[in-house]
Length: 251
Ligand SMILES: [Zn+2]
Image 1 (cartoon, helix red, strand yellow):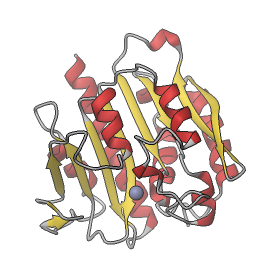
Image 2 (spheres, helix red, strand yellow):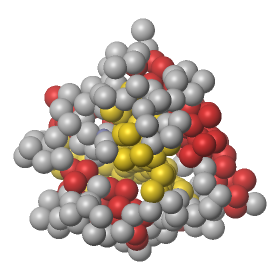
Image 3 (cartoon, protein in one colour):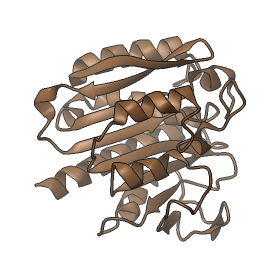
Image 4 (tube, protein in one colour):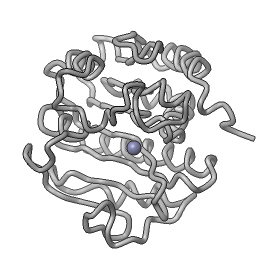
């Protein structure tokens, strides 16, 4: 059986150390939470002129196919990763991952804290981000209510990509058929909308990333009640499709 250690954080960190070396990424600790170090990975300065990429996973600890899908993909994709200037946060809530909990050890939903400078790890992440701009940003999530895979696409840069990303992601899982997801209109697994800073009082990560760092911002959601192997394969397929689209656009 694959992915049986998806909540084992030290194991995940060791896998990332190997994957980082293969993909030419430097791995650095930038914060801690609940006694666990939190890391980011970044490309060498020589990658500065390449298309730029932001990926994060595991901000909700009970969404194991986000962290597992990202590492499984990175282990298979060092050559693709080397074509980007990448900044990757492979697991933003390690305590949550170990305890299979959405929240952080202080009971916060970190994905509603991105305009809250009182949260130390958010402050530290904002500092790492600095003034970076990215051609593509992906936040990897899962959803217990989902009927299939779906994607939030912030309506920024055209042409829109969510349709193509979803096509890649629905080889292993169906698209979510709901017409309303978290109170927002959805169509064939796509929730597309414009956002403004006052749309939500407590910002999710996607808001900060879109406003300051990336016109193209996607949140990928796989359905938590489906088999983990299919969820991981779906996250991997969407990552590959998104990076290939980004390369094609930058040519
Ligand atoms: Zn989530």
